[in-house]
Length: 447
Ligand code: ADP
Image (cartoon, rainbow, N blue to C red; front, side, top):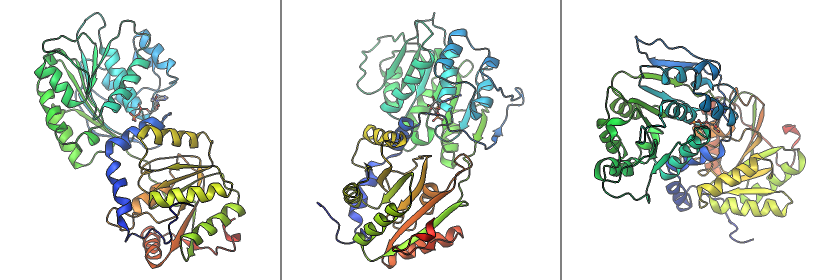
């Protein structure tokens, strides 16, 4: 085997973890989530209203019919396969579509239906008979802008004559060239160029302004300033201003309040708590990485495992393990950080479709990915933060289950050496849940 690690990829050998971290930006993570979320994430959590408008009481709807949408738009919604509004849409949509328009800040995790909500709002407010931009949507990257555009095209498929313009890098315009697209979707920099430098459209005529992925947006220098610059050019009386974010910490909140002034409605859908209840956690002590593989091989040979994910500290270990498992007769997928986002999404989607039963990945690459049908999670190396401390959050997210997954699960931690053992002991202590020791030659306890 090539590149066989002779010793365990100890945190001491940090160099290998580094490049992967660098390649995993917030934008990448966000796009990856979009590419693998083919369906809605349902939530049992209650929607919280952090700030209300005393003049317009909030109400919610249970059907799309109740929204009195244009006929073509309702058809578009059904064409997308939506039968009922999602949790956040139930409350957001009546307010988003109300007249006079109300400004809104909304936060909920990725996959809960935010994009669909603001796309519906733009489409229901646009007037196709007017040949100038009326809705503007800002996104952090080219790829994310295209994702939104696809939603607009799908949902607006029955709206004949609808035109969408993409203000993204590479889309050249000449000074004074007037855009006749109804909806413009773009990144802040290019949109600024279009609006200010080239004067391709008049921001004063916009009726809907959307800022998507605010938390990703603020991570990029310049996006905040450009967004605020654009927002200042809008007509405050006639333009509805909306901001969406997957997370809502102080930094996002300050930015949100700056771009969406005039007492917006602020709603929030809490992420369901993950817990380690119903999860059997084990650890196996080994002498080195070869022994870890042997023990793992033994487990896979002993118990019947549906779909499993195996997490490694470095690409090298992941690639080596994939090779060893393949030789052992397993059909494995390998997901590592040097792949493009599209390649990663393709591998995850194959795994989701059950084409592979085992997915091997590095700690960093798989951050934040949910694969619901996984019942066994193997930490071939314990999860560590960038400064090599036990990464409790990642451990919980990987192994923990929420109400939506329900099922019970199995977590197996491979340990070699004092360092990984002490990491594991910290994790055990942190969660106050016993991680049982398993004898590599006797798997009876697992079953
Ligand atoms: P977010 O913007 O919060 O990440 P999206 O609007 O992209 O979420 O929705 C996530 C997935 O759920 C998409 O595949 C989308 O087509 C789908 N979806 C959105 N709203 C609904 C709905 N009401 N019913 C069914 N599927 C929906």
